[in-house]
Amino acid sequence: MDIPRGYHTLQDICRLFSLKEHTVRSLIKKGMLPRTIRVIKNKRYLINTNDMKQYLSSEDITDYIDISTVSNQIDLHPETIRDRIRKGRIKNYKLFSNKYYIHKNEMNLLSSELKLREEYLGIQEVASLLKCHHETVRKLIRENKFPNLLKKNNGRLFLIPQSDISNYKKELAFKKTCVGKNAAAKKLNVGHTIMGKLLEQNAFPNAIKHPNGTWSIPLKDINNINLDHYITGRYKPINANEFTNLDAINKVKFELKKVKIPSHLEDTYRLYINFMENRFSNSTARGDTLEKKSVYITNTLKYLLKHLTKNITLYSDSEIESFLNQKGALSYIKENFVSFLAYCKKTTLCLFNNKYSIANKISKEALPYTKDEFFDYYKYIKKTYLHIEGAINSSAYCQTWLFIIMHFINAWRKSDIIYELPNIEIESIGISSVEYFNTRKLTFAQSQLIANQVYLKVDKMDVSKTGALGQFLCPKDMVVPFATAAVIAELHRRKNNKNKVLSSIKNGIYENFFKHSSTLKNFNSLKMNHSLLTYFFDYVMQETEDADIAYELSRNLRSHISEDTTMIYIHSTNKDGHINRVSSHLFRRGHFGWLYNSMIKIAELKHFNLENKTKMIEKTRILTYSI
Image 1 (spheres, rainbow, N blue to C red):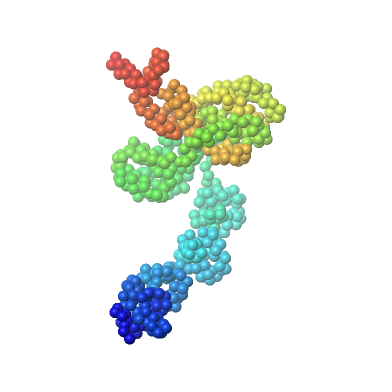
Image 2: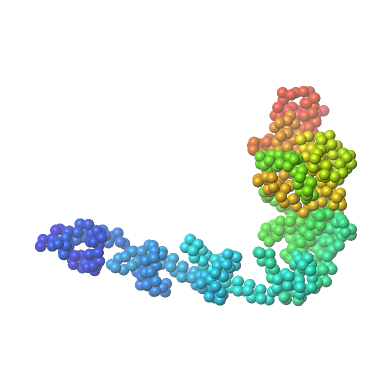
């Protein structure tokens, strides 16, 4: 039989390419050798040599490794590898000459997985190790007891690291030597309140508070505690009803008596005590703030005594910067430390030369509400009819109403609202009971009397933070809502024998005050203060002829002494450039720009815009300086 050029019999092809006959027949059936000639009813084949070469070139197995070699290299049974191929877990493979070949990357993945399985265990394996049910392990996973677990197969497979299992077993062993908060209180024969105070004071140094709020307190800590040191060792103010500047100084010294001062930091300790005395002596803060600050000042020194390696005066600038860059210190510790550095540099000889400051990021609560949010709050608290019933029935509701109203008529700080809003002399309007409001409401004349009364009482108020004189301003549309809330709050105050009309606000606003609105939930005092200042400034800037004194008006509203301080509270509104633009004009006009502006007003140069006024003021300044 003549064989066409370029063709060979099946047997010759097998010899030429070292293939088995059934492999070639299989390729023919699959159509992989398309130019094959069938002879004598398909019992013999003539195969095109180029077809075979083309197929073999497409089946390049240069980067592929046969299963036997893979099995030997990674110590995995060949049948296990074949099973993974059949289940699709090994995707990059080839079947050549009836043998499986997998890509070298697949082998690397297999090797990594086997190594992973040496360090990680599955749920069933962990259950067996901990001698518990597999559902218990799943519960531990939900409780985040194994924080470093891996999720595979789209979250269907959990692999738990041996280290997490070891830590959990240590936790179990630790718990066996511990008791809970109630059991510890019973062993010490103290009440729950005192027990809470002991935990706050870190009286049990090895105790652990769990995420769900429960405690594990070691029996060793309970047996070693000196109760007298903690229970009788609390500072008592000179006057039980008042915490003064002197109390702040005495409390810090009292707490530091419990601390051992390292000999190499004695000079630093003395400097810090002087710094603390100077700071509290000059403070105008209220009692609750002083008490909080005394804790911060104490904690700062404790931190310094723990981390300083030599007296502070011997630190170089690079060492100071390195110390400030440590991540372990809380922000208030760094702030107090920077103040302490400034005091040291001012009062004694120091190796460091630089001045330091802490740049705090603007928090979300410092950003103002949007105009729509601001107006929604404004409309809500103005609706007297909406709040009358709640105010009559609940002192806390009424105080919240009055407290929030104050944010829309004055940019007072929260503490000034609570402590400086005066008690109301309701006798001047002839009301002695909340029942009055069941059938009647205040007239504008009555409300005006209350607003004027508050204005006169507040006129000489000292603002706690700045020492500036306070003021009370009430817009006409807020007179009735303010007076109504103030009178009802005063009636509750007298009934409950409280000192202040807003006695409960320091514990938080009434939880359900915004029950009539589905959107007004997250009221924040500082955020609302910033909002009022921002939109007040924006209004003066755009809607009046007094844009040049917008800062001054805002400063008065906040009772700030410095314009630089007020600027911190004013945020840019949606129209770009206002603050920068006005800042430029204020700078160009100088300290007495307002005086020249008044002269322009007297001259009735109404056609002058902001830019023209500034140019006129600049010329006037030059002229008056030359005189």
